[in-house]
Amino acid sequence: MTAPLIDLRHIGKSFGAVRALDDVSLAIGRGEIHCLAGENGSGKSTLIKVISGVWQPDQGEVLIDGQRVEGMTPRTAIAHGVQVIYQDFSLFPNLSVAENLALSTELQEGRKLVRWGRVRRIAAEAVRKLGVELDLDAPVETLPTAGKQLVAIARALMSDPRLLIMDEPTTALTGREVEALFRVVRDIQSRGIAVLFVSHKMREMLEISERLTVIRSGRVVAAGPIRDFDEAAITRAMTGQEIAPEPYRWEATPGAAPLLEVSNLTVPGQLDDVSLRVMPGEIVGISGLLGSGRTELALALFGMKPGHAGEVRIDGRPVRLNSVQDAIRHGIAYVPEDRLTEGLFLTQTIDRNMLATSHARLSQGGVIRWGQAAREAAGMIREMAIATPTGDRPVTQLSGGNAQRVVIGRWLLNDPRLLILNGPTVGVDVGSKAGIHRKIRELARARGLGVLMISDDLPELVDNCNRILVLHRGRVVSDTPVEHTSEAALAEQLGALA
View (cartoon, rainbow, N blue to C red):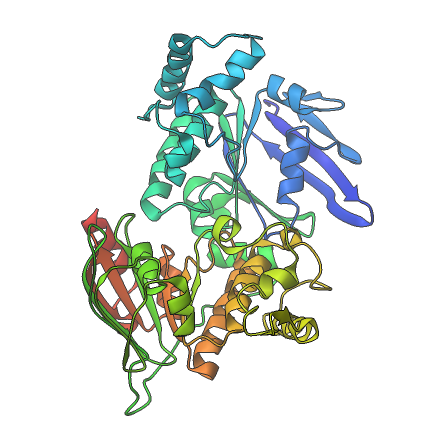
């Protein structure tokens, strides 16, 4: 019988008193697409770093082609054909695509002078190997997330890997971009390259992988062919509990006036004659393909598209939204899709992140009342069930789900009337995702908060919204009560718009 390409046996790894990996075994065959699943904090990242030689295990052994490898380092891992594409892609944003692709080759060969013709030839060959089209002269920072990912994959393939590890590769991708990525992954597999696909998105696991290993609290809790699993089984393995869908059921209060009314909102080249309304306690979903105008609508309502045409009313009164300050003053809050670059102050504590939009309210004579501020931050940490012993810890120590709760909780301290959520659970594991959904529904019911939920996750929209709007090229093309649609119908509609 042929030995696995990579065979981890009884791996253990501790950091002080914390047992990150406990007796973990994992085998990856040649040319196999293997999914490693688990919630945030389960040990996935630690296991990746053991495979790639970043960390040495405290116990167990690593075998490659049936031979034990002692003291694996990143250099020896690469020599054995292991390449990792991390979530941040590890690219140089200010350099061009060609420079990013050729840099490692130039450094490995010790070249002191840049020959641009050679750089372009190296980059062009890398792109040709991947079988995609990329503008070699484009600065990487100008590329969409999917484009940056292709650059990272192309760079990894330059070293002729035998195992490509992809860490949460679909976190910031739209549905169509995920489909395109899966085509690339299958093409990579057809060349005999194994892929370890690290994820917590169950539908993607079921679609792309051949085998699945689930870890929870540092231990393997389920493993086997993907045909032996369904979404419910994966959820149980990842969380240790049953998480059933909880559809949001909302009925308008008789005689209630709309909380938000948008009439003929137009931003040249981005939004065209958009009209919608949100009632108190209502959760309205917004979907659409990349470039549909979803985010532009959110930004316009949050005062970041000044000079727009049309009318916006809050509680029946016309309002001007020409700045973020205007939006906040009228009770509008916005949670952006990318919490790391747009939603959090990564060098600050949880408390300071929580209080970032409350300084004016908590100040007297230009001096912040820190006692009250600390009490409010602690109260919101409890209300949002953020898993931390204290608010003075760095926000970077939180899991994705807890970090998202900080961003939402920050706005709740200001008692908003309308909460705009752009990708509310992007990069959040299944257990935290369910908790965030419950909190959003609770806020809508208890506070009468109006919610606009923008998402590519169709189950998220169907389970949490009472109406779903679809945008296409800056226009609303449908406004459908959730009881009259389904995930399949929405997917078909979006597919027809492609």
